Image 1 (spheres, rainbow, N blue to C red):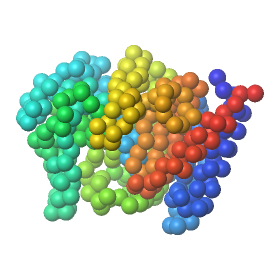
Image 2 (cartoon, rainbow, N blue to C red; image 1 turned 180 degrees about the vertical axis):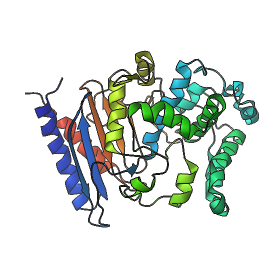
Image 3 (tube, rainbow, N blue to C red; image 1 turned 120 degrees about the horizontal axis):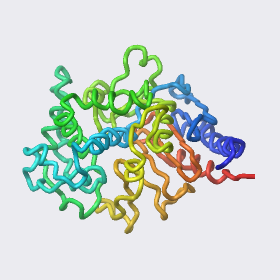
Image 4 (cartoon, rainbow, N blue to C red; image 1 turned 90 degrees about the vertical axis):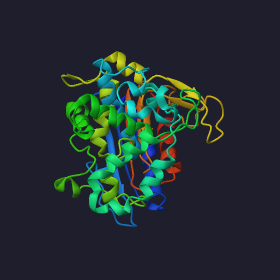
Amino acid sequence: MVSSAAISRAFDAAWNVLAESVAQENLPSAVLSVANAQEVIRQASIGGPSPALPVSADSLFLIASITKPIFATGVLRLVERGALVLHEPVVNHWPEFGVNGKQNVTLWHLLTHTSGLDQGNITRNRAEYEPFRHRLAEIPALDAVAVRDTFLNFPPGTAYTYCNAAFRVMAVLIERLAQQPYSEYLQREVLDPIGMVDTTFAPDISQRARTVAALDLPYPLDVFEASMTPSGGLWSTTGDLTRFGQTYLNGGRRDSRQVLSPGTVAAATRIQYAGVDPTKGALPNSVYRGLGFAIVGPNLSEFVPVGSYGHGGATGTRLLIDPVNQLVLVFLTNRWGQDNRWRDRAINAFYGSLVQE
């Protein structure tokens, strides 16, 4: 295991990159935390000058698609209980979903982004949300109808396309099997057991004072939060995300709670699919997916150990869980569509400096 002193030196190298990026306004803000499986080793935060942002280690950020592995953890809890089977068709639990050729889509396809679901009608629905601004509570149901009625771009399991719609399908499955709203289920089965006290689809009044505004959102914040998007709608903190990562490093255990079994953790965090994204002309084997997790493969450009896992987010965020060095790295910032070069340069600086003496 790498020493705390070596990790601290690597942290300084990464933080120098991030602080300079914020000073030059390439990043609007930055929070970086590095922990081992038991404790936080270093963390730092900085808010940008334009706009001036109060940022601290306990600030809440819109984490966007880091939501995916958190939500997937809730789904995997149902699999562990025998309520779902990975290779079982969705129509076994939601018969209406089988229209337009979707009868063979399985939970495994949804978790690995290989379902082939077309997201066009969902995107169009979101563009039409304005008439529903006075009926915001209806938006999740609108999304559920959209994924129910959509069609396939390719046969399930034959290719990869990053698919937010798959998580809305899983939200419907949760509600049908758990008999409660998926947000409440996620709170009970994942957030509370791990101690993720500041992770939420809509910060409460006390949390609002610590939220960092999400810049350049594609649609208004009230619409975004009302959507409770299971693929990317959570707010969180470095502390909560660190606890989530540590739970996985510790074989699914958090303090006295076994949130997931070690076997489930192993399955979720190994490469389940390696292939091509047909929409981007990617090279063969350039996409690596676990069950809800992105996996670092052998031909990615970062200096990160192969087999590390986690997820990034559209707001520039990144959660990285490194089982080789037993580390959790959390990076948060707050601009939708953020250029990730600065984040990735900092990660490379961290690993390029991580030398045990």
